[in-house]
Length: 309
Image (cartoon, rainbow, N blue to C red; front, side, top):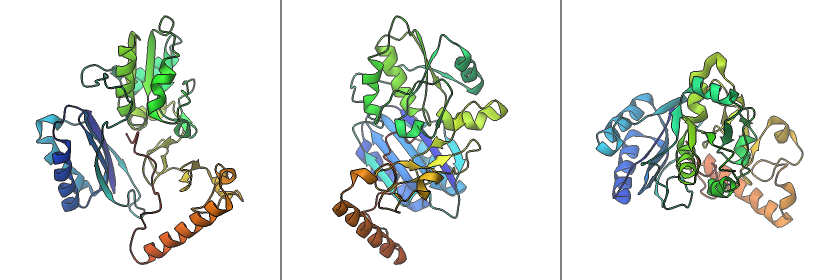
């Protein structure tokens, strides 16, 4: 089972019409995952056989808007589902920043490879910013990187407003697969930062390129059923609380506060007895549906697709 991710900021005047076409292709090829479409572009993570994914990418590439897409590939465990269904959605933005005047198709930061990125990490004059959210950063990051403390990418402009434009002339950004850095770098350039770099292809591409020179510490959160990947891009050691969406380490799962599909150490204090009872019933219904070969839609199975690549 392969997993491919790709995005492109490009003008799409017919996102709803394109969504209908991509739903049909995905069904024909047996693909699962998520495709987000907006007037500003496409953002996608798909899982399926190598051959089916290749056909999908070839078909999409015949559209001039999506020619020569940069596609990142990783492996999933064929015995475990990466996604449970296929979702093709039209949204106002493919990654929400809520800044209408930012156009990443016009100008973004300078893309750098793994070797150049390592040199930027060593440069004391460069401010390295992790453009991901706090629950992702908790699993792993680059040493010395600034945590913006965001719960959602929409909060990035608020963090960026606190940067000293006179002092921080050089900034380097990274995220999971590159899309948030693409938009964040465009935002920083528009708001007065002179020199902005972004890790090409994000952490996932860096892990594929860096080899023995890998500086990333920990695991990388991903927006699918794997939850995280290690430095070999294999499924990591984390699981997910289906109630509060917090990634959980092995010690969290061993905690007496962890009850499958009901609670974890991070959300136990925020739940009433009625809520816990409701969550337990929801989990029971989900197991019942699974035994009948169905999917119970009331159980959230993945994190938000905000920053899937």
